Amino acid sequence: MASRSVNKVILVGHLGKDAETKFTPGGTSVTKFSVATSRRWKDQQSGEWKEETDWSNVTLWRGENVSPYLTKGKQVYVEGRLHTRSYEDKDNKKVWATDVVAEEVILLGGRGGEGGESGGGYSQQPVSMPRSAPRPQSSTPQQDDAFTGGITDDDVPF
Image (cartoon, rainbow, N blue to C red; front, side):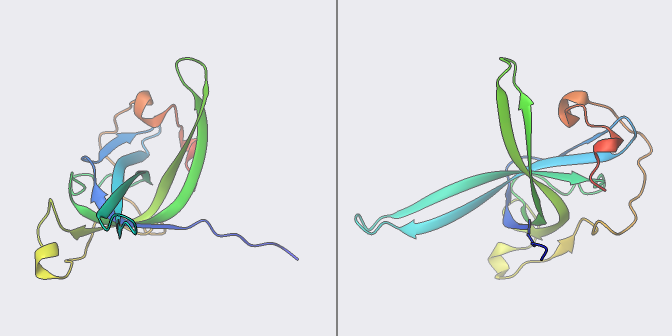
């Protein structure tokens, strides 16, 4: 009997900084941004409210059109999968990093954007297409190996 597994992540949070889009040498876009998600709870002993924020690094392949919309403070819905990788730092120590590889990103509104929180609802404005949709090609690819970590088109997961 074959075993099954699931690797699915759903985040609703706020962007920590503006998204950055770079291109692989073959012209494939890589958009990266960070999402803050918070939780609040009441401490049982002190009765005080406490808050904890987690930061998730997100990578969106072939999403060059969304970068102008993903600005610091905006609330987003991200759906994707976890991806863990390793690399050697400048001291030749092995470092592990886990990122979310996004398959869908939807701008919800909120803090830095139009619409959203004060009205009690979200103005859902899709700014990303599902992976199966055709993606437009960029007319001026730029290369930055520091951003893509030496990733080539052979490393693109689809």
